Image (cartoon, rainbow over all chains, first blue to last red; front, side):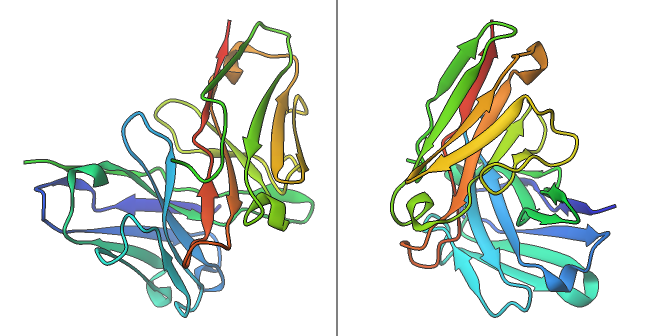
Length: 121
Length: 113
């Protein structure tokens, strides 16, 4: 069974830093690109960052470029998001997610349960 | 401001049919990229509802269907049920922004009257 489990969220002051982790299991993590998506309280989904399977290609949303760094450790089946210079507007639930795909006649979309980041003094 | 445009809300009575539109541009939906639809119940992670414009994952009732034409896509729900009350998001891909990847609609709240 595919599982994505985020951790590392919490309360942080403006200007502070936080590192989110996403532990993957149930699939060959090293073969798949991954994404971080966030959702501010009461708001819609916002794509944050993308990393290819080998880490050779990385993208960021303009809203986090220069402040957030995505990375992965394929040996540990883990995805990370280093968040620096945090702002109040970064307050959100952060999800790690895999690109949806179809295989064997069925289609799948895997998301973690999310971890809440609150930026406040 | 979301890259893809959805109506903020739609509503319908039980048993009725509703549609949710998702309008993009030539750099995303119109460029031929697939559109996926997600259903999000309160306090839960989004769940894949429609993959690749019109394909239903196993376990998704056939009351849900998707279509795509030009720069737009649509999600249709027939035989509306109370349990369908949720937020719905379309997602595609965009090649116009510097290093962008996934793009979302702003979400549509479905109310079952």
